[in-house]
Image (cartoon, rainbow, N blue to C red):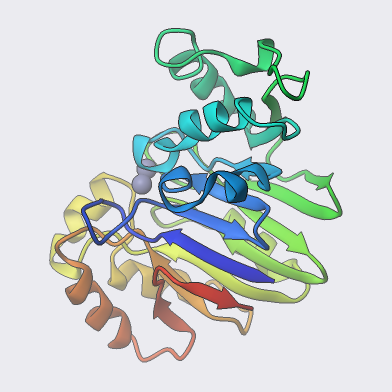
Length: 254
Ligand SMILES: [Zn+2]
Ligand SMILES: [Zn+2]
């Protein structure tokens, strides 16, 4: 599978982008960065997007993606999230005040609504366009679920934002042919107490999470906070685990 990393940071400036990933050009995980890095035509090819949680850095481009799709003759965008996360998005974002609820508006060119909401029960595998999607709860400050995507005989795990966690590692360890794990390391080791308070990982706790992962695949640290990205990178290297690496904004072939 091809993983296009559109945004790999937990903050943004001219050279760093918020969380957003694209698998084989048609399935997205998180929407911090989608529209700002994709052409209109590329946006039209996205069939589904999984949202890990409702924090602004993971949904920033979602209203704009929906709006851009509304203006094109593309089928509905399937928005996947755990039931709890979906409820928060409906109540706080797609509520008619922050952004319209496009599921109830027919797009003029396609004659269909621009979005379909697909709430998921955590732990239950859902089939979609030939792939499988399993939401698995993680430990962040608010309801949040990572996702295991199985596509063309390969699997990839995205935790989204999380502090120390367990269920998603158990599921990942039982999933065949995992080719990559994308988790996070937001703060450097000297800000461990901030990482703990905000339910994020540092390289140190990323190292502890690595011990829970038994699959032999690269484990990427995403969501580094500016301006600590270099410190975090060197601390990840110092773990001396050949699987551990930082996630870069580039295209990966897995
Ligand atoms: Zn975040
Ligand atoms: Zn968050």
